[in-house]
Amino acid sequence: MKTSERLDRLPTYLFAEIERKIAEKKAAGVDVISLGIGDPDMPTPQLVIDALAAGAADPGTHQYPSNRGRAEYRDAFAAFYRRRFGVELDPETEIVPALGAKECVFNLNLAFLDPGTVALAADPGYPVYTGGPLIAGADSVLMPLVPELGFVPDLDAIDADARERARLMFLNYPNNPTGAVAPDGFFERVVEFARANDILVVHDASYTETTFDGYVAPSFLETPGAKEVGVEIFSLSKGYNMTGWRTAAIVGNADAVNAYWKLKTNIDSGMFEAVQLAAVAALSQEGDRIAREMSAVYARRRDLVVDALRAIGVDVRSPKGTIYVWAPVPEGHSSASYCEHVLEESGVVVSPGGAYGPNGEGFFRISLTMDDDRLAEAMERLRSSLGG
Ligand SMILES: *Cc1c(COP(=O)(O)O)cnc(C)c1O
Image (tube, rainbow, N blue to C red; front, side, top):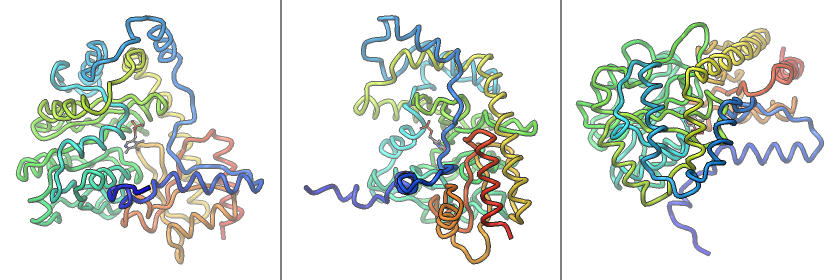
């Protein structure tokens, strides 16, 4: 059997490798605490489950959905964007459902890239920002995110060749894996850059509803001119404990949304309509309240982890959003060797920063998706096996 060259070029997906290691340890009888994967541990809110059940019982949801999505779904996104961000969206032309942000990021590469063109991708960043261009037969050019610049790319450092070839730019704030938020003025500079270089900005808004200390994350589309050069992917996965539901939408520039829709009509047959009705429930004001409650839980866990790390001498920033803590590995370790060491010594799984791109090297990521007691135990194990 001969697989395609595009498949051969792909690296193993990061978490597939982590899952293999966990299975190995568990088989050896180790009580593994996995803080590797960012998958909310708390259940989906009851109002969403109830809406799914009611929707599933209605035969009107049982046939092929359309790739445009139900009017209720698009209207719910429009109302949410108006209420939450003050952004006006036309439900007819500026909103299309996506089967999760991952699918959407991937397919945008197929919709916009040709061989010889590139996507500008944050480094470190979500792996599909680089895997997607590869599968599309194109390339990615990495934009380093470094602590000195607050983990936002230095747009002036993007060279003329990359500007010329780039068709897409992937950004994500609040940011996975660094936990950084977009500083004031950054999105304005992005709009200017995109306009000057004819690039579609794709803002991955996976964590706008998961923020702490009174910080409220903006939509990229709040920025003047953003809709002329960009789209935003709003995922319900993290903010509403819905990773299993595969529910998101692409919103913003009508031409880009239409290009995505055109591609998708050839790939999948849309989102189960009962799931769309469930998402409508999540996007309600009651959903806003639940998302804030979830943020309070993560804020508490963040404090627990940051305090524990600082107590063993790790110089870590306390993030204002996301479900991650991004911390430097000790002197003398690579991120991979440190994560192996932590797993061996304490049975705790954390992700190596290098797996998110070359500029993730020197860091590790702790996911806060574990109940407080287990998280506290994980920190205690780190302290006793690694402190001092
Ligand atoms: C989790 C995550 C995704 C995937 O979201 P889905 O909607 O579940 O596909 C995409 N981007 C980033 C930055 C993420 O952290």
